[in-house]
Image 1 (cartoon, rainbow, N blue to C red):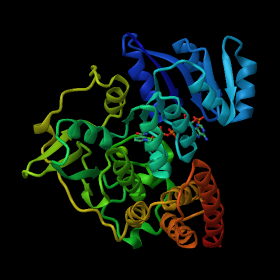
Image 2: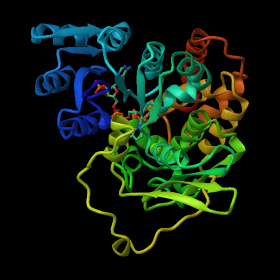
Image 3: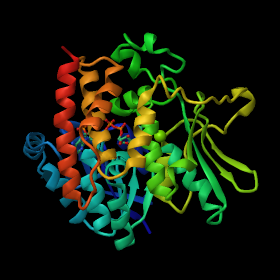
Length: 385
Ligand code: NDP
Ligand code: MG
């Protein structure tokens, strides 16, 4: 029986690779809805190519233009439209490949309906991990990680009994500035930061990889996905991006998950789970790779990693504040208003001005997010003068 799938963020890096997985599924995955932020021409082209009759655009102007140009289907608009796409369409599985905290609403809508969620949008778990998990437990919906490290961990953990895993080791490529000193980082350009050595990804996560914030967000993501305490989650830099993560067991064994860096592998795992499907990749050729190397992250130079871990441990609104400040800072860096080293500075100052508060509801997260964006924008202004 085919699985009815909605892809949110289908015009992005993960979204387009997910469409490739769907196209190769031999009808096992049936696309029933697609969404984007504002890129309506590409979204329409995808809908026509895959015979999808319901689409949503977060941007209302873009939705209006799409509705004018397309009379064969339904165009939903705004954040409510995204929710309607998920809840009003009889689907079995949603892939959330939206970028940023904007993805939280869709995560909540999906799990609230009891629909299984393939989750690329790690920000959902960073911002609202506890509430998101409670919601999934209440409705019985599953969260299947798409992030490559968490997909690896999901597979490694599946074979082990509870209480036998001592530590999770999350691998990091180290990004384009691995080995740089703070002095060398002072003048790096947007172009240099966007040139990731091993993965091809969307702009925001590529900058997060260069600052190591991506790994910080992933530590928080792992904590919520697997219920692992922070002191049992470690980061190890592995520049070749072949080992996607490892687990250490109580008997001294360490298990690793290996493969070429291609996001279609974890995407296919999440969309077909618990089945496996073929992904067109060459078999791993270890002699050709020669050496796999590992090193400790430089936490003093790349401060975002420690900031994220501390926010995760503090809990409450701290991870939400961290994430919002990071989004503001990365946006400012990409538009040339903030230096690379300013990103960590903005996050640290925002966190110190907004002490963590308890989270009672998703509304309190929306408020914390808005407040953090206001403060972070002020800090960006001050640093850029
Ligand atoms: P992209 O920037 O390439 O794509 C983002 C998608 O989200 C686009 O479809 C975009 O639409 C849509 N979008 C943007 N803003 C909004 C909004 N406010 N509301 C609704 N939709 C919106 O990002 P990636 O594909 O790189 O990343 C997506 C998520 O997956 C992120 O959380 C990232 O951390 C995670 N991830 C990505 C990996 C990768 O290899 N790329 C690896 C692991 C995790 P539009 O085109 O119209 O702007
Ligand atoms: Mg990852």
